[in-house]
Length: 105
Image 1 (cartoon, one colour):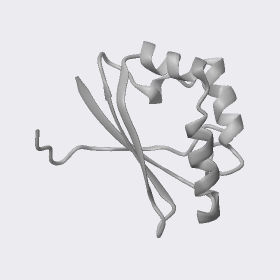
Image 2 (spheres, rainbow, N blue to C red):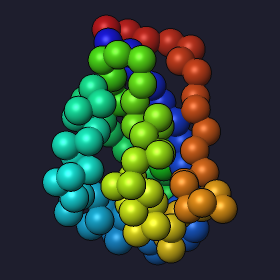
Image 3 (tube, rainbow, N blue to C red):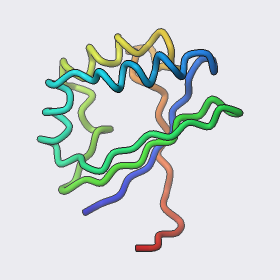
């Protein structure tokens, strides 16, 4: 099992409720895709001061959610989320991988 962490950013603090709502209603086909890719124990936290979203997930295998960008379901999700998140030109969220420097099991 691999643990991965990355950060993303909301455009404005006022979008946090909408961000939560969209994730509360996450599409079943996206959940199935994530689970099929071995993603589990996936959490996203929010730092209101910096507008930073901090994501942590466990994956079985080599990849994780960050490796699914070529999938049409993921691209549709990116388009859906682009109005409230900082994104790349293709609407992928600006996502910065974070190295693990400590872990306590």
